[in-house]
Amino acid sequence: MGGGYSLPPQTRTSGAAVASLITGILGCIPFITGICAIIFGLIGIGATRNPAIRGRAMAVIGLILGLLSVLGWGLFTGSAYYLKKNTPIVQEQFAANTFLMDLSSNNVASAKKYTNASVADTDLAAAVAQIKDWGGVQSMAPAINGDFLESSRNGIVDENVIFPSGTKLFHFKMSRGDDGTWKIDSFTYPSAVNPSGMNPAGENPTPVNPLSRPPAQ
View (cartoon, rainbow, N blue to C red):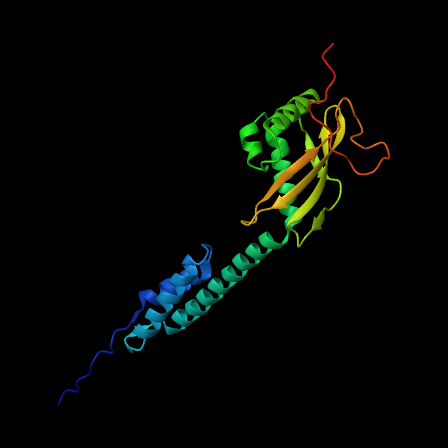
């Protein structure tokens, strides 16, 4: 009598398990790759209950990496949002710096987006002319860290603005709207009439009328 034998059952690796591991390792696209790793991992774990399908370990690892990816991106996004809402000096300086660069490039329309209604168009035009006389903005650096009042809804920023003709101090009073955007309520800078931009007592900069410039010779 001849003895019979049967071939061992053929096995294959779960495609979902492989996909879960790959997307879990990548994790480079915020949330998307993590979510895909979780979904493929769950599918792979379910598929590997069949003895003919391998890859359970890959599916589990991919699932864990996917969960870590989603958690990590969630913490990063939440932290970024928190910092955006709770670091007013950074936002104030960004608004002031962008405003000055727009004026330096004669882009009044863009600069106006960073001001409230208290800043007149004539003030912006005069500032553009003065900045042009100084040779245009080269760079900027904060003169102080900033001062905040009323639960950080109002603030003051002083910027040392470097021109080819020298460094000038710009003084900004700003406020934050309900949408969290910081805008300029008023700004002062040295003028040809008052080069120091200070009051006679040498205290904080006082508003200098940007239009008060000597007549052309």
